[in-house]
Image 1 (cartoon, rainbow, N blue to C red):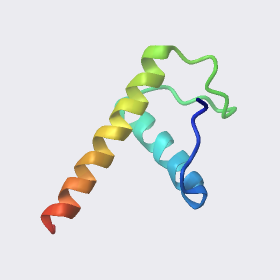
Image 2 (cartoon, one colour; image 1 turned 90 degrees about the vertical axis):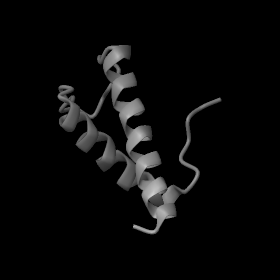
Image 3 (cartoon, rainbow, N blue to C red; image 1 turned 60 degrees about the vertical axis):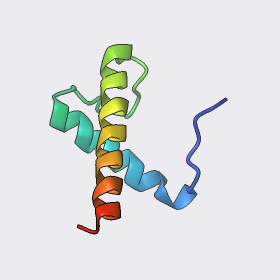
Length: 65
């Protein structure tokens, strides 16, 4: 199954979030926008940290903070 954005309006925000997370964890961001030359480890780190931050934000929202 191909990865797809379930809420198309969120696509730009998710792209921006991906670059912010990559910079935050020290992954060298490709300037061309093409991530195909990145290692699986680096891409996985970015994706994993994105999920971690989204879960934390959701939990904070549930807690009413």
